[in-house]
Structures are given as structure tokens and as C-alpha cells.
Image (cartoon, rainbow, N blue to C red; front, side, top):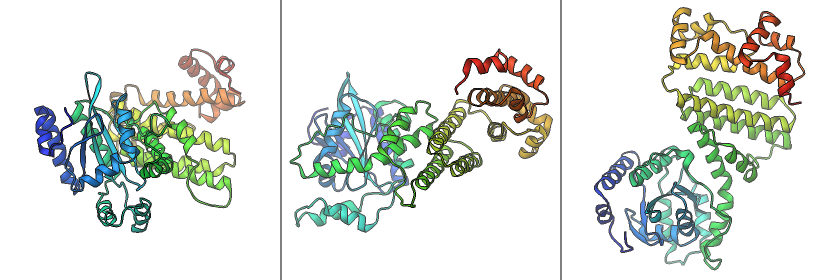
Length: 425
């Protein structure tokens, strides 16, 4: 693909038939749900080849006139996954790359979009920061105020679709990149947009880190630890003043629990399960006064949500009724669980629930309950000083000997030997 300027339709016609048809279908799909979404196509050198934008000149200036275009090019030379960028105006861009014979051949830009409504006061302040010539400022202001508002869930879906249309490759949101490859800024400090974008990047890092965290929950992505670590470096929690540091940490953690619950619902977790988990962890957060304990609860909660969504995606054939029973068992290992009560909660007879559970889950209902209790037993033995007798009683086994027999079958060693080998404190 050369660097010659073409109109949008001409450029689409230059693609192979399959790519052209997929791009046209995506365009129709976007139009059916939103008034507009600008699509700009650039050469590997950052020259605008074509776009469907009405304010093409302004959008090109915004994207390639500062550091955004250079960042996009630099990232695309070595990476193939979509790249999410944010400008000082508070809007987002998504960049999808096309490589040929191992080299960047073009990149597609979706945006700019707002993912939430922006007040006129906020926009006016951001626009004023550009310090534009008087003759150009009104046109610029009108263009910015026409940027579409598209929720992140929709916008990120369009990015996934565009990547498929261009590359015939299926990806999910966890494949997105949100931050620059290096901290080095590539444009010239003499560029008036450069300082604005530099400040915007620092302001938007917490938001981008948050989106990466929540995408891991939505996708059930088990490779989440680096995102969790990065979020801890760039974000200090909710920006509120509640008078005392501990209260701020508790509020931030409860907000994070609510965000994780909603992301998990978007990932397929039943709403009741997600809200029950949110309430469970929020109560734990509010009942402790140790910062280290709150951090531990946050990590455990985040991993718990991800693992549950991951299980759903790995085993999609499990019905809502059986999933509800599994969720209850996993969340109440210290309770005495009765099959009759589980059956009643989903409207089944005991016999039908037992048969259906074994068929879908691959093990008996009794076996699944025992499995969850054994997992808790192993944890209690390694992180507490509770005696084997007390552990047995807490997990509602009828006797220590019955508990020990089942523990030996599950772990291959006695509770005492297990504790000796895996002791953590």
C-alpha cells in the first residue's frame, strides 16, 4: 500500500475482497448502533491515506499533530495487537495494525470517542488549553463537541471486530495494550501539543490501568498479575477526601469490588453470584482495620472473580441452575450444606439435581462439596495454628477420623504431615 492520498471508498476498494467486505460490514454494524465512528487509515510513515471523517483535517491534526501518532507508529513497528490511546481532551483512540511480511504496512485508527458524557465546562477547559488561533478555534470546538459518546464495552467490541476484519485473527480485550512501550516521549518538546499529551498520559494512566484490570475479569484472564502490579504503581485509589487514610482505603477497595462484580457479570457470571461476592468481600474490607489485610482481601477478591469467569468460559455447557449450586458451595465451605436445600433453591428434586450435577460438572454433588471443603482444610492447616480437630469441626465433618480419612484420600498424606510440608507461618 503506497502513501498516495485516496478517498475512503477508493481505499476500501484497493483491499482484497474479504477484507473489504468485513470492513463494510463493520461500518454498517457501527452505524446501526451509533450515529458515527470515525475510521482513519494511515501509512506506516504516519501519512493519512483515507478516512470516513467529516472533520478529517482536525482529526488528523489531533491524532498525528502531537505525540499520539508517533506513539502509535512506534508501537506498531514491533507489536500487532490493538493499542488504546487517550488525549488531553479525555477521549480515546484505538489503533489496529496491519503487517505484511513481518513489517508494518498500515494502521487503522478508530476514534476519537468519549466513553462517558463530558460536561461543557470540562470540554471548554480542555479546548482552551490548546491555545488555538482565533480563526481556527470555533471550528475546532465544534468538531470536538461532535465526538461520539460510545460506552467502553461497545467501543472495545468494535476494536476487536476491526482487528478481525483487517487481520482475520480472533482476539479479546485482554490482548489490548494501553500504555506506551517506553516512558520516552517521541515528539519534539517544541510542539505545543506535545506538553498537553504528556500531561494527559500521566492523568489517564490510572484509568487505563483500571481498564486493563477489569478486562482481565471480563475475559477470565489468568495472566493478570502484571496488570495488578502496574495498577498499584500508578493509582492511589478513589480521589476523595474522607478524613482518614484507612477510611479512604476501605472506600477505594469497596468501589473496586463493585467494579469487579460488574465486569464479572459482563463476562458471564450470574448477577446474583457476582453481587453476593461483592457483598461478602465488602463486609470483610469494612470489618478490618489492618491495611495489609485489606490488600490481601483485594488480591484474593480479584483472583476469585477472574477464576470464576475463567471456569465459566472453560466449561460453557453448565446450566445456570448447576452453576448456582456450584457458586453456593464454593462460597460456603464452612457451612453444613444439605443437598435438599440446594435442590429446593433451583426448583429440582434431590434425585434430579444429583443426576444433572454429575452429568454437567463431571463429578457427584457430594464429591464437589467434599472437594471444596478439602481445599479449605488445606488452607487452614497451612496458615493457622488450629488443631486438626478444630479444622474438622469448622468444616462440619461428623468426626475427626472421618475428616482424616477423606483428607488422606484427597491429598495422599495425613493432615499433620500436610501441615509439616506446607507450613506458611
